[in-house]
Length: 464
Image (cartoon, rainbow, N blue to C red; front, side, top):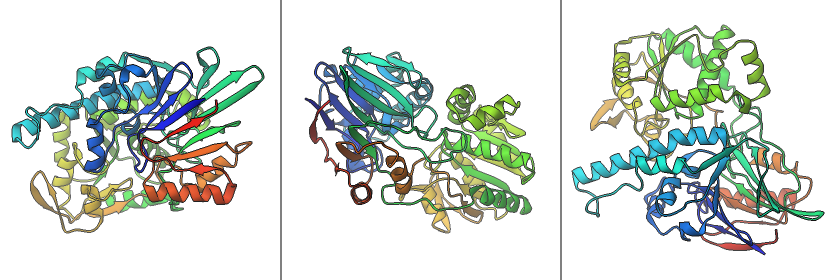
C-alpha cells in the first residue's frame, strides 16, 4: 500500500504540499508558501511534517508561489533530491523564487530596523542565495516525457492550461498488464484561454487530487474585450492616463496580447504602452521564448510574423529612472505596473500621482482580495493610504472581468465528465472550506463519485 498526506492547501487556497509515500520513495507534490492570513503565514515557520532528508524528490505543478515558494527553505533545511517540472515552470521559478527571497530579506531587514519582530535578530525564511542554490536541483522536462522511478512508476506532466508551464502531475504504477494512477491537478485552467492551450483531458485515473479555488463560484459571462475597448477609449476621451495594476506573471502577458489584438482590429488607437515591472518584463521574455507551450492559434500568429505580446508602441521600463520619467506623461498612455492588488511595487507611485486627477483611469484586471489596497479602492472609498499619505481618489475606477486563470465549478465538472471512469476516490484541496465542500457536493450530486475533503495533515492509504 501507498499513502498520501495532505500537508497544505487544506482549508485554504495556499501552501500546496502533498506527500506521496510509495514502497521505496517519498515524493512531495508541490512545495508552496502559505499566504494570506497571519495564521496561515505562520505555518511557513513550523516543522514541515517530515524531515526534508526523508523526501526523495519534488514534483511541481506550476510556478506560482503558493505551489513553489517553500522550495528554497526545504533545500536549506536538508532536501537534496531532484525537483521535477516543465521547462517553462523552471524558467518562471528562476524569477519568482529569487524575487520571493529578496522580499523575505527585505522584510527581515525592515523588522530589525523598526524593532517589531519577536526574534532578535529577525531572519528571512530564506535568502536569495538559498533560492539560487535550490534552482540547481531543478531537472525540467517536456510535457509528455516519461520519467521512471523504481522501474515500475511512470511520471508525466500534462498541460493544465492555467499558466505557462502549468501541469497535471500524472503518476502511474505499471505491474504486468495492470496499472494504477494518481493525478494531481495543480490549478486547472479555463476553456478558450487567450494564448495557452486548454487543459489536457486525462483518462484511467484511480485517485484524483483536485483543486477547488472556484468550487462555489461561476465566472461572469462578460464581454471582456468589449469592456477593455470601452475603458480605453473613454479614458483617452478624458485625455488622461490609464493605469493598470497587474500581476507580473500571466496577467500582464494576457493584457499585452489583448492590446495588440485590439489595435490590429482598429478597435483602439495605438497608444504608448509602458510595462513598469522588472519581473513582468523578464516573464514576458520567457513567454515569448516558450512558444511551443502555447496554443495553436498563438503559433500560427507567430508564423505570420506577429509579435503576440507586443503592442505597436510598447515600452519596457527596465530601470527605476525610466519608471520615474513616466511621471512626465500627461495623457494618452497606458501604464501596466505591479502589483495586481496594489499591495506594493512600482504601481503605488503611479497611483499616488494619478488617483487625484479625474481625467485619469485606474483599471483593476483581477479579483481584489478583502484587506488589500486594491479592494479598498474598488469599494469606492474617497481616499486611500499610500506611503503613509491619504491620497484622494478622483480618477475613474474600473474593473475588468473574465481574466481569471482558474476554472469555475462548471468548467471543472465539464473536465471531470471527460474521464472514462470514476476515480476510486477524489480528494478536494486548494480552496476555502466553503468552496471545497461545495465542489465536493456538486461532484457527488452530478457524477456520483466518492469524494472527500481532507483535513490538515490527514493521511489516507491508497492502492497503487
